Image (cartoon, rainbow, N blue to C red; front, top):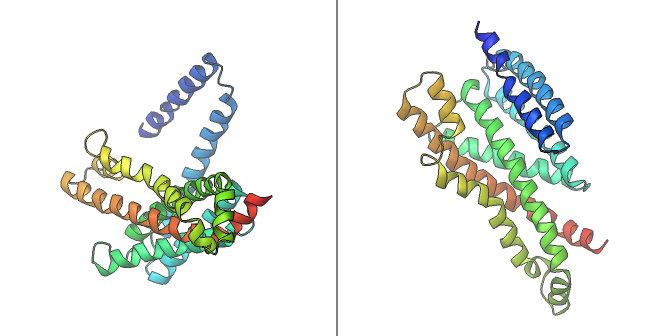
Length: 244
C-alpha cells in the first residue's frame, strides 16, 4: 500500500508537465526524463546503501566518500569545461570533505559509523560541488570584466594574485549567498531537509534540530573552504582563459 502512495506522488510531476506545456516553457521533455532519471538513480542508491551502510572500517567509509569526490569532480568538469578543473575540483572537494568530517569526528559530534559519515559526506561533497562551481563561474566573469584592470596592475608590478583580489572577494561572496540565505530562512521560512527527514521518521524534534544546525554550519564552512581552494588553484587558468 505504501509503495502505491509513493507512485501516486508522480501526479505532481504530471501536473508540472501540464503547467510547463500550458506556459510554453519548452522543457517538458527535460522535466520528464529528469524525473525518470531521479527514480532510477535513487532506487539504485537505496539498494546500494543497504550494503554501504554495513561497512564497519573507517578506511572503507572514507573510500566511499573519496569515490563521491571523484564523481563530483567530473560533474564540475562537465559544467566548466576547463581541463585543469578536473584535478583542482577533486582536490578542493576532497580536502574540504575530509577536513569537515575529521573536525566533527574529533569534536565528538559525529561517530565513526557508516550510518552517519556516508550521508554526511554526501551532503558535504554535493554542497562543495555547488559552491565551487558557483564561485569559479563568477570568478571567470569577474576576471573577464576586469581584465584590463588586472593587466594594468600586473604591469605596474603587482602579482597576478594580488591584482585579482577584488575578483576573488566578489566571487567568494557570491558563493556564500545561498548558504547565508538558507541560514537566515531556517526555522522561520522553512524546516531544512535533514530535520524534515528525521521528523518524518519519528525522531525527537530537538535532536533533529540540533543535528540540522551542525549540518548548516558545516555546509557554510565547506562551501567557503572549497571555493577558496578552487580559486587559488585556478586563478592562473582563469586569467589565461580570459585572454582567449
